[in-house]
Length: 339
Image (cartoon, rainbow, N blue to C red; front, side, top):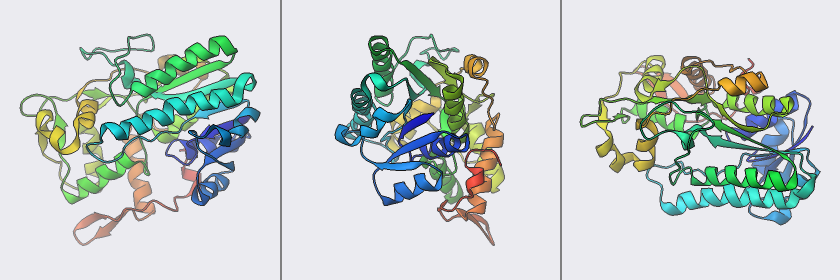
């Protein structure tokens, strides 16, 4: 198939370009600079200069059989402002509108990565694809794109597929890299609910390589509709950190209650890790035949730390590991989780 991918240089996007080309698809990846063009070309795709907020640069989308709108501008620093999130909203929602306008009636299928926690329930109970959504400022644009695709697909007769992914992590992801750096520096704290921060919430997570594999599975199986894509085992933030701490041979960090942590790391992150998001990928696994390469966070975190070691993002010193910070030069064969 001819696939047009926005966000082609991102944590999900570059893995998706590589996985699609490895499977024999013709991939055009939207990029903004020379570095992005090189990244897409190295992974077998054809780079195209443009911006989802500039519709005149999106003409190649009209030639595609399928569009994957993976572009975001999610803030990566603690305590993002309302303006930071509004930029992400524009990239997601206006970007989707621009792609649909350019593609017109030629697009056969449109794929969008949303997040499972748009539908987590206020009482912490298990939820699925049919559950009522409860967006906040971090997820309002994801919900808006979901609604846009549902409405537009009915009037323009194309398949719209929304894959709501679990909390994504990867060696090159900003969230995992910050965790590794602050864990090794001793700055990290476990954020928990309750007065003393002792109450943990079960989260649904997903390695970015498995997210990319899920989109390829959805494209090749021709599924449409909304699906949840998560690994096989839920995990608390404390257990997630503990897996990193064990592999990096550092003590388990202390705890801080959510009411206090929000001043340091922001309300958005605190809400994310202290409210349960119990769901499963049962429907997607059945319909698309997808299985994760990293069935649980344990296997996924081993891959993350191994990659950091291979690329000298973490280095051994006389006192243990230290954070060096670069993951440039990771072996291509490991990107999609197949090695």
